[in-house]
Length: 318
Image 1 (cartoon, rainbow, N blue to C red):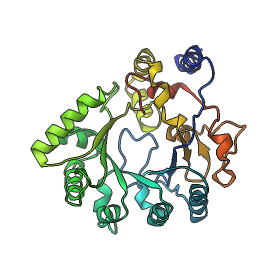
Image 2: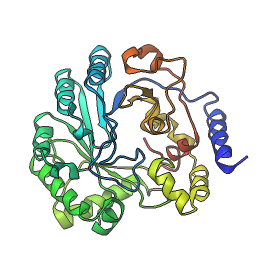
Image 3: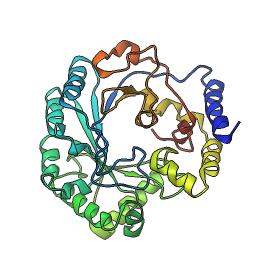
């Protein structure tokens, strides 16, 4: 029995040892929708393996099924992700319709998308529609960002953030602008509050940039990051780091317990990570957005695997 198999059973055993029952959803506060894996970037740590060559894309029929579910159920938040979600041709329609339904709309953006042809007005579109921006910025130093995301990425990101600030994002009473940090290697992120203070201080001092909150996430041992771990011979060491840092206090805030993830083809998952691994929701629940059943899905059993240690390590990924 290999070390990875041990890790799988280890997580299941850890869950059963603390709540005393399998991990279950406690409701659906967020409908997280992956609009496709097409992206203008190919970041080294991307867990979905997004990039310019990816063809997976949510079609109009599925988009309308998502909007129908959003309108027919008490789910307050729509969380749009990708790839670069903005590259889906139905993206703006989905945002406008969700706002008409009175929903909170979050978009996970890489910031560099603003510089692609036809995307230059995205900041204004976000501001006009009250969209919450969740922007990936792996670090506040140029060399660290460019090492992970490609040369010139940091300068583009800074320019994009400045434009969002000019539109009122990150200011008191203005649009919500949150940043996301991922470690640049096989180690856990530092405490969220401490790192947020560093980001705010350094970005304000060096570039005049303001934002609301920083979210820190451990790199998940899946996708391109898993390939990197295997290539460098660090998969076992990283899994040991995650399992050693297991913290049951993170259970209440685990995102899988509060959301449903919708794949680009409409398949339902407990989270975006399970989507990548092809682990759909429990077989006792409907598995496609066209068959959505809030009552059953909101109390479903969560599908777990070894990667779940990434969300329960240290301060956790909430």
